[in-house]
Length: 546
Image (cartoon, one colour):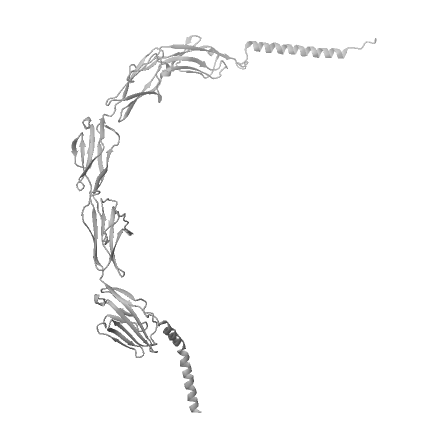
């Protein structure tokens, strides 16, 4: 019984072990079928001196292999026996290779030129099948010292042909970049030599290479890039520009003038200013202070580039200095003007400067000449014959020249009158009632007034005559005389005033109206009396029996 039990336990253990390895065995079977082809992923590899390379395989497990060997030509590198878990590495490679016991891949470090050649992977399976893979390693020299040099250190635009040469150490081909973009060539103006290491630019222009130029040397494993190369092309001067401050063509005497000059040029241009053909200054900017007439003339700027040996001359700036108008004044032939009698002449002149134009205004509007209003040929004198009161107002003279304008004002006063003299007030008032009468007249200067009552001069000279409490003696004919002290004219106006008794009929009814009212009232009373008497008589009569 014990013996049978032991046998049964052994069978059970074998069954479990088989079940546990069923999946790996299936994988190995599948692997055996797929490994009938090349166990290497590629038949070529590229490496760089001093760097590492890995030979990739298609293997995922070594459980089905008896032996694994890597050879370079006839020389063994490593032998691996998976069943014993032993790896024999040749002493020449011991410090330079790493071996992956699962994938059979090897990494070869610190490559040398001599490492190039054929590498062979041999695999012997548990079924005594041999699988072989072969890969060729090409070892390239590292790319170093990539740089760009120019045949001309300071090319001149349109005059120079520039040859940029890319040089480097190692194994590579060339590429050119303008900034981050590949360089675009037209095959004539800008082209490469057959090798590609020289960029040839014929009649170079400043716009050819706006961004830094890079040269790239590359091979399948690495690349090297040069430092940025900036091509500086000398050009100009061109587009010369002059600026005048102030910008007006005519300048005030005593003011300042600044002239500046600029031009597109590389290297920067050198400047000099010319005045009427003679050299004035060797600076791009000049300032002339306190201008005089002697500064009138032609100014021009000359720009020079010492690299291109080119000169350019600016257009001529014509400067004219004029004295500004100042101290403008209007003078009058007479200061006392009487309407209808006086003729006046106004003259406009400036203390400094000469006027190109003269303009007259009256009350801020342009003055229009007429029969009585005339201007002299130079318009500086204004004549008004037989002035009228409408000629009064503000006269303004405006003088202008090419640098400024100045003006003066004159207030013309016309003396006239008195005119339209009148007295205003009530014609009748009650006894002790207050009253005021006003006398007015159109007059310049204002009139002086004299009052009379019934041709008797009153001691009163104001325009308004006031009676606080009227009495019978205030009735009569009032006369107001307005006198203009300048024109000497006097004009009178009269006003009749009646002072009535207390309770008298309002001043609004005339004597005839009052009499008519009285008579009408009497007639009405008589008629009413007759009517009443007739009615009484009829009521006392006895009727006739017949």
